[in-house]
Length: 506
Image (cartoon, rainbow, N blue to C red; front, side, top):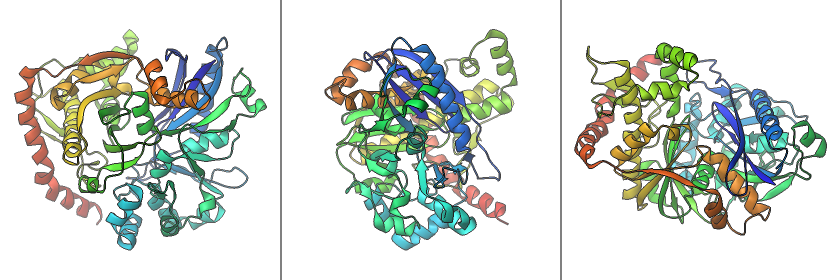
């Protein structure tokens, strides 16, 4: 019997079936649009997401009839939450993490409770990305939604609910709502009151790797499952699930997730209050008993998608004519020489290190010799400079990192992985599948159903390192100089960002 992982991302979903050895048996993915009704608003249509998940399930199940899935677990993006009426109606689209319409409500929560107190409870630095401030925006602007809501569901518990089960949410995902006490491992009544949410409106929090039920036979048949009694298991927030799928189970190791957004995840054995100074999230790992420290940026591969759509007509034509992936065409146009341009990837705010929602993307160093390939390289390097600042911050906060495992779609590019190794000055390993979040929750599904005696056994059996990229000493001096300049850019441009934000609010 195979094990299945569902990953519901920001711009697309994936379903992957794995053999007990970790080999990929079949996979399917769908891309769905981000809806932006106004500047700064970014939403998903939950019904569209569910239709695409169903399509992927049917496609994968059709390919594994000789080795049907016995258990499935779910990972997803954090923060986005869907209001559901008691009769199952979807009451609104789900605002995703980069939706910043709720800045006033974020400030209200921070003023009422204090950023340090919120962090002490939740392990999350206060900001507009989280679920509770988004619900407060509905309170102030669409109160009828709150009045009709039976359950607020993140995408892990939304998919479980649509699979016919009682909504249940794992600890790592619950922590991303800003309503979860990471010490008591339960919803915080104080935070729920501040967010105008009742406890019964949220899913039941459970440890990752807990069986929550079986898909009803009729629905299972409709989705193409051919095995009997297909169990659904609690999974994890995509970053913690990806870390598990990358084998990041002990201190010293970190995962670099390169998907729509880009995240750095390191393991620690307890929440650390001092991480607040660096705006680093610290919350339960998908591997029960551990915590993760998360530093990230809301752009990542989304920046390459922006380049593809706005500047990449030539690359799209080449990809269409050759049948190649357009992102391979985009990245492979760069040469091996280090770049001179510097790009701040702050297209939806600065991300973790500065935690500035009004910062904007900036490209420095262009002249008439600048080519499209130079801009592509600046994107790849800028995202890596930003993560290198995150590594520095984690080291200063007491979380040492001596090796990285890269996952996600970006990990398929060996050229980008070598850039990552050169700039971070750390070895970067890629594994046999770029879909580590799906692999991580499949590991949880196997552990929960007794296929493996422990997560460590499951990881040893299912995760196969494919290649390691070592830093090249001849690049170190150039990249360290560039990194030092990069680290000064934000402070130099901060007054400009503030002036632009003030002008836009007039």
